[in-house]
Amino acid sequence: MKIKKLFIELLIIAMLPILTACNVSDDVNEIFASGTWKLTNITLENSRQMIDLWGNDVAARQKSLNLMEEAGTFNLTFHSGETTDGVTSGVFDVQGDNRYGTGRWTANGNSSSRTLSLSDFHLNGSGETDIVAKTFLSGLQHSIRYSGDSQYLYIYYEEENQPIRCLWFIHPSN
Image (cartoon, rainbow, N blue to C red; front, side):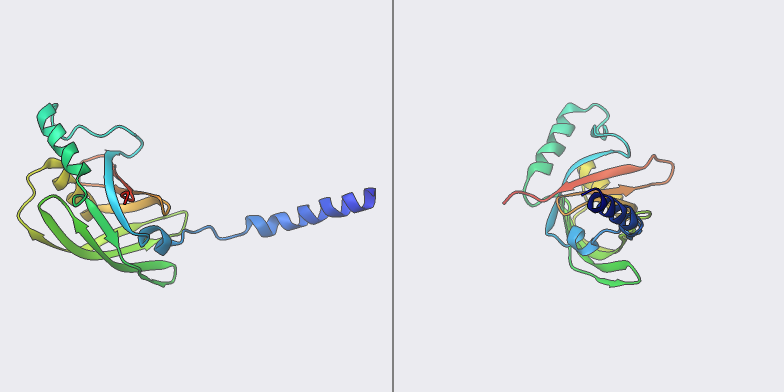
């Protein structure tokens, strides 16, 4: 009985290097191409509180929050991409408030980088008047990395002379 227990313990110890040597990376297509993403929040990098984009203008803030709740606004849809050397690229569709368009996405699912680049934006429609819509589109254009999974997506972006901010997304309920 003691020999059997000792054998099992040695086997577990021998397998530890194999289990810890796994290359941890995201299934980028599962995360990005899992459906339409809906913007729910814009924060500073390590915060959960929405940043004050309105300069304490309560009416403008409420208008923005109402727009965010509308089904057809602040949506982002990634289409399945092709993976080469661990980097996945594809196309996406975006819908702000008054503008909509397409572009290209490139993501590296390596757990140490999780870089994300959204480029080649082709936007149509009239200019955005809402500050959240402007921030949403600008944030996407300045994306640097992501985190999340197929249920929650966080896109981090950096604009000149500004702290890193984060766009929060979920899948809208049907």
